[in-house]
Amino acid sequence: MKISVNQKHIDIGVRGSCSSDPIALAMREAGLEKPHAGPSYISWRKNNKDYFVPTPTDVLQFMEAFDNKGHVKPFEFSLSE
Image (cartoon, rainbow, N blue to C red; front, side, top):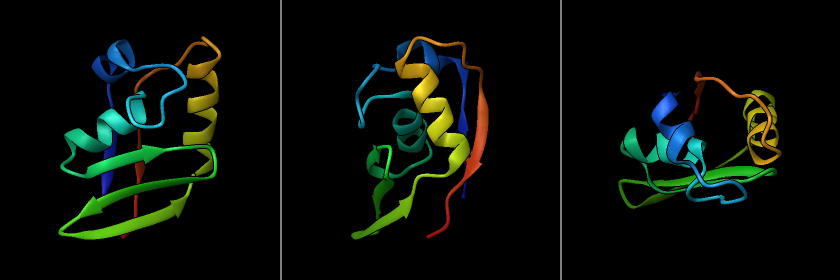
């Protein structure tokens, strides 16, 4: 599944929040329930099943830059169920 993080997600995302940062907001918009985007793993719920995957490097770099008030721009990443 392709997740698109757009400028709207960046603008309203909450720094330091695993459930309201731009990554989680984009996941929610893509139809995933209970998104969590943390430094170790990304998780979500879909069709009453929970998924956990290691945080991809590009997503981790985005989160670190966002949380530290660095420059971030829209991007896409893939999640596998």
